Length: 354
Length: 190
Image 1 (cartoon, each protein chain N blue to C red):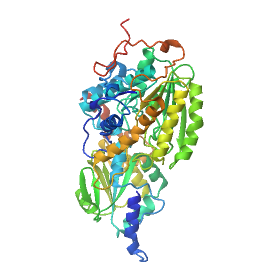
Image 2 (cartoon, rainbow over the protein chains, first blue to last red):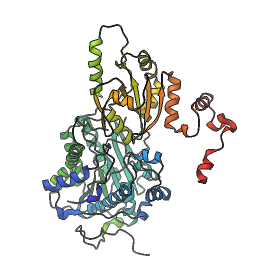
Image 3 (cartoon, rainbow over the protein chains, first blue to last red):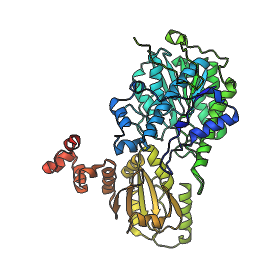
Image 4 (cartoon, rainbow over the protein chains, first blue to last red):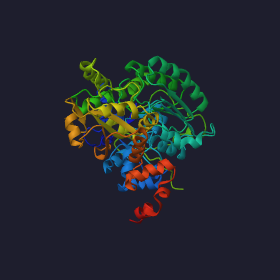
């Protein structure tokens, strides 16, 4: 399985900040150590093009990010203090998702060891999300003819408000667009939830059985309804009990069962699968416990999705046996001519000059 | 939260049976009180403001504040959406994590300049103090205070005028008449 990752996914935050930034590098190291991914399967993204970001975000917001002129209120809403490194990092993560989606179309399954920043809105960031990688990447791939329809399966415990907002205009399904599904804690942030194509709000304290009983009929149903060229899976691990921000109560076994079910169902449907992290905020810190331990615990939870995917798809780091089956239309003929060994620049997805 | 509930219980036990005020007993229909660390994390992740409610166990007005104000439905609804609330025993000897400082409740209360109870202190997600609201207030005034801070109305409007505007249902500009030049043009002109 090929994945996007860059050491620059980790940038400094103020001490004791709530966001476990070190989880990205910890996840990479863990997956390499376990052999779930191999060094040659790790593709380092460059920074996403400003022009690509404009497919979703406003000029005003991108300008404020580029020049460091966000207001204090905007910064507070984002939940992360602005820095040049943060903007670079966020652009890298967006390109990582563009690459991961493309690799998924080529290989059948791929992922980004970051991404799923589904709260970011066109004109502002919120909830630790600066740029909406899901929305930008889907728009880029649609524009370049790599896919027509996609299913966003958002199982992060928080509703995917940014993604729902962006693709709200696509709700006239199946006109050709993005079908968004969000299964989340009903009482969780965000307070205002713009409608996804399908929203399922779960009560506080929902455990393994009730969660899986909700998901089992839902996923085949939306797969049939959406008939997508690609499934984008936001496998947030903040559904587990004692996540700092979650309100559900899944066990580790429940999380593994969820991810296993998603991988198997999507594979059996013959649709390429792109894995994105989204939220995960580990357990509450015991007094005296180092922040690094928390990041490692979070990374270990995020690794579940990749372990399950490797088990379901096989651990072949390059192509899997699954042939991508973008049914008809422009996505049928991948036309990528560049090596993606991680050494060179990230592959271009821009149109040839007209 | 569990820890703070246990703490409250532990503090309450020695006093059980005594017919005296104990503001460390949290009423059942209280808001979702968080630990300091969780409150800061929640504020950072969910765009909320940390509300530190400074109390002392023996403080009669604190018990009233708990009983009258924090149980108010409108206050609770607004708190749930906009604030990450924490109870701070300003005589507390247990240590807690406030950003990168490990301090006792007594030390933190002192550092925040809480000189009497009840006191509500509004803290931004970077640890800076926004403002303080000392003393007992009725639920309506407290709700306005929560709105005043959240909406950053203090940038342009004195609190009493803000309250007057809310009570009459007028816009701030209408309530303040000609007293204030439109502030937007000033900020845009810089």
